[in-house]
Amino acid sequence: MRTALILVLSIVALVGATSVEKKVEEHAEVTEIMVGSWTPVVFETFDDGAFGWSNNSVSECGSCHTGAILGGPCKFAGREVEKAYEGLPPHNMIRIRAQFWFLDDWNHETGFMKVDDKMAWTMWAPHNIAWRGINVCGGSGPDFIGQLIDVTLAHEESCLTLAFGSNLHKDPCEASWGISSVQVMTTTITRHATTRSFST
Image (cartoon, rainbow, N blue to C red):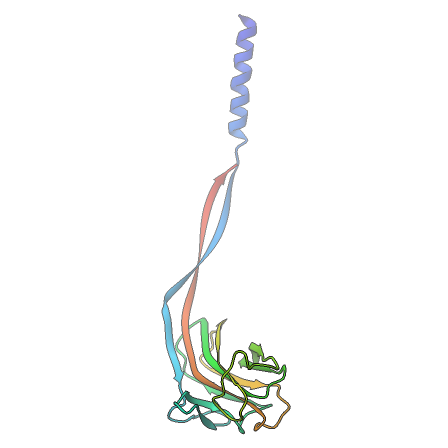
């Protein structure tokens, strides 16, 4: 009987010790919440011309009015064009959409977009683009048209500078580029920290 009593007391003591040794750990989690949706700030189609760019040259591409583009044959080759936008609404994220047109004789060169003088998008054009392009502008060769740019970046300033260009080393009547449908949108991302407790 005494031996049984001692065994019971030992089990109770062990259970009590286990309960005392339990620890509570807290883990912080950060959740990002988008307030509202994207607010359109800029939408340029160039159908009525270009304004405010460092070069406002515009081309019409396609016999069926494929669309107006900034740049184009015999206009833009190995150069950059840029435009500054001011008065953006309060935000901490920005989204830029546009279409880049690779026209005529590209040979492994690259088109690009910069945001506030920092590279934000690049695309390499293969030498033979006949299998994926049609001829709409310039010479008789196929063109790699309307390649989508869609970039989202952290950004808080009320002004923004966009630049487009390429590393072409040819006469713009041999190979050129252009852009169309330039869009700028803003939004605000709010970060909330929540704490969860876990017992171990």
